Length: 287
Image (cartoon, rainbow, N blue to C red; front, side, top):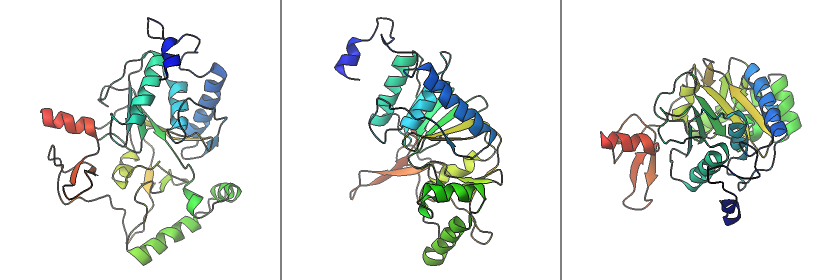
């Protein structure tokens, strides 16, 4: 936070002159109304009056608005970025949330009641009562095939997804696989096709019949959508070309795990594959 904001900090940890959870109450009610509609229509994109937030462009203002709108004093919050709890994005958002809401934070997803994420789902199994908030850069999965918003909205309303199926077919015809390295489109409850945010394919099956609630926010596009607990979520695939997650020839270079999503570090001749989920990797090494 800036030096000026630092001067406003109370001795008890709150911010003088700021409403609880930073946003004003009418703005939070606007977000919650959109989320209620989104939960009632899983996968459906719901517009809302997105506000300016004290974060840089692309830092997850949509997810931040959801978090600040649904958070309660009894919550424990985890914020992580592509699996890391120590990135600049995660640290800055965690600091803003904890100082304006006065809630405890954690890096362990098993202890958190509310988890805000950029492009990952924790490797540890989540349970009922937990809330996942996803930061979304592009909300509409049809953007690749229908750049105009008026057209894509009509296609969603008419359930006309032939263009995205044709896109996937051409991928397999030309490449032998899907070109969606992340944000692979999914079908929700046999109705809407949505983007699960830019999570890797490794995480897509974990949305299906999940016990936790998933809330998605795109601040620049002013869109929220949701997947309630125990909802059918199916990645788009063909019968003769089933959906496949990423495969790695080796395990994590640090903890040896072979069942997690790995990322490359030190992009040179000494590059290694390590767990994307840094907290779980650290706990495995400790054990």
